[in-house]
Image 1: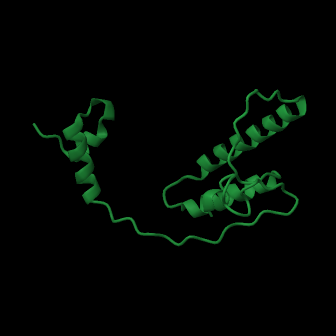
Image 2 (image 1 turned 180 degrees about the horizontal axis):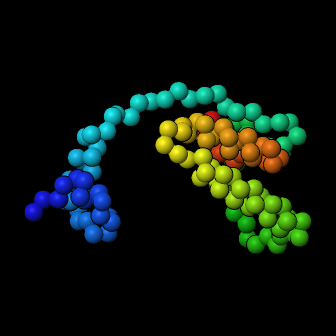
Image 3 (image 1 turned 135 degrees about the vertical axis):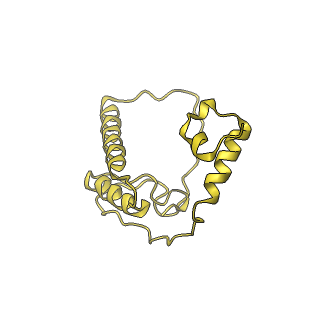
Length: 132
């Protein structure tokens, strides 16, 4: 018995087999509109008081050097790492609340960028290998 795409997609992927997955995906994909290349907006700016990473200007991060010893972090470095983690968690949580049907990734990107900059941090994907 052949599974319809609607039935196959309503079941957990763990119960689908190779052919039923292919069939389900090909049928559902044929009903979608084709993906259209969007407009890439200019790179967002960052206030001058925010410390820039090594790739901020060129888009090319410097290579990490191999070290023979593990760096022991100072209490100040650990506090900065904690602060960075809190900002990252806040940005991730916030971005999840913005993801809704009809909301563009451009809109989400702008709002999360603004949040990170407001926290005094540099949005790490910005110009990383040229990412706008």
